[in-house]
Image (cartoon, rainbow, N blue to C red; front, side):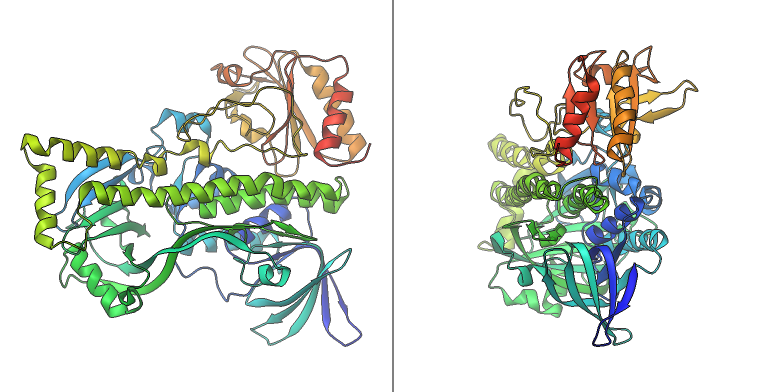
Length: 594
């Protein structure tokens, strides 16, 4: 980072990459770029990290990225214990409530073998108010003096070779400038999108939600210590209330803090009246004057939008600047983390000169379709609750509480005439596994772009988005398998990939691929690791034959894996000239001229 002074006496800072925004996306980008040796500076207009306990579910893929950043262990240490986020449940009422339906969520706390097979990392839960300080501390340790909060970007312009922004340091009052070769906007679309003319398109204002962040002892009312999210159908007021424990030291029914979501119609002014919202919460939960300390009430609208483009000149956008979701499914922050993982290795190579600038076009080509799907899945998840409301009849403000309570009795009654009613309601709630078991959405997305070399294999047949099928087909995520070295030290195949390096994984007879990788690393000026893996032979062994089952290539074949763990190239068998094959693939992936 260099500093100069303009002819007008203004301080000017020069960096390779400027990150605008200090939320989950921006802080992750700072950590990833620092680990790749990129000269980066983060500026956040906000004085602190988030004061809202939102975006709390962190899926397996997000935790893999955060492990790359060196913060996963710290997150697991203070997040929800796996056994207390293994289920979600629907209840009729809260105080004295009864369970309507209960199902596993997000891998059942590490008990679902499909989720265990997908990744060495478990899904976890930590509210943003506690996650972001961990990310910020790590980012500051990796980049001392380059993570600046309360520094607001007030203007931005581009030239052919740089981005120039004007900044105000609100702590000191100083105005200064920053020039960067490239910028990554993670500011939620507040500043950069309007300047660049980037539009967010989609559905907005479908419903309004008031969220209360509270401290309360609900342990005498809540059961089920393994439940993370509680969907409380409240016949007394004809609303659904969603409750999530926020810890910080106890979870489940004994959590000290909670967030409580109450939905309102868009034209219902009660949503803007704090006293009314608190009264509605108390009435809905049936807790009377039970002590509740309300820290904050926030309002937001349910909708799903996607930016019309993810790049404008030398500026890439990520996170909420590029897409916004309903919280259903927990796909917002996790998609943002995946965005910056994709963008940062590409920015690093372009800055170093080891890749052509066209590589950055593949960021939008790869991430925008995935984010579009995630936005739609979030909306579909939200709409699922309308079906639950209709199937149960408990959420119906057009009737009286007495009528709604009578419907609940039908749910639990023994009258044969109620059997079909109960079955239909339970099936509707069970189908909400679309939110809690959408493993292919969370983990199985695949890329199609110039940074992926197709191998001519057929597109996989369509399947339920709940089912993830590992594959080494180019564009797919590298499958996880446990392998071991000659000292019997175990690691995941995913651990073979570093944030700043490619990896070649060959079959047990594929040493020629590894030799070629070593020559090309020196020739192209990039880091490439290489390994042979077989059940009994190779640099690493596959004792459980898991890799054998998922690798999909022969003993003489190989895959080239990008730093974001996407398979970039695959050869199903040995070739006459592996060096030429890998050279061709790397030139294509890195947008290098021949």
